[in-house]
Length: 131
Image (cartoon, rainbow, N blue to C red; front, side):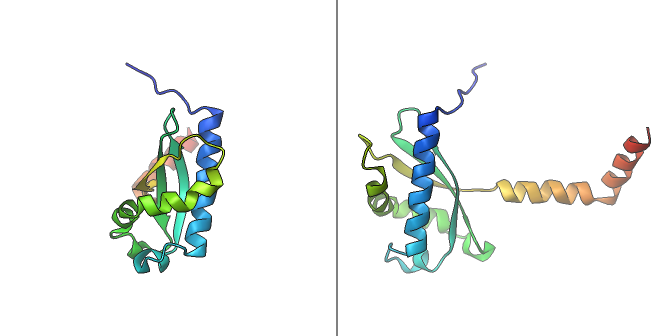
């Protein structure tokens, strides 16, 4: 069983730099793409590979109605987006390839919260407190 190595400080720093640069690109609406320029996108996290040649970008639209096709659209325009982010990483030897994924962690947290509010679960939790 192999353990996944935690990211290095350099991976974390590059990921944060990419996250901030992507935020600027999405805020300034420089993509000239109607589907992307009208959607408010939040970049929640950027994970980089150990060799810094691939960056997985986790995004979430502000409105749930904008979810459909967002990741596909971003991945289709990843080359253009990469070009807009490149100046922020001018000190790097290679600009990482960008791969976009939908961030579902908020959905997972909402589901757990919903389960904890279920009367059956609340009853069991109250019973544990009494013991």
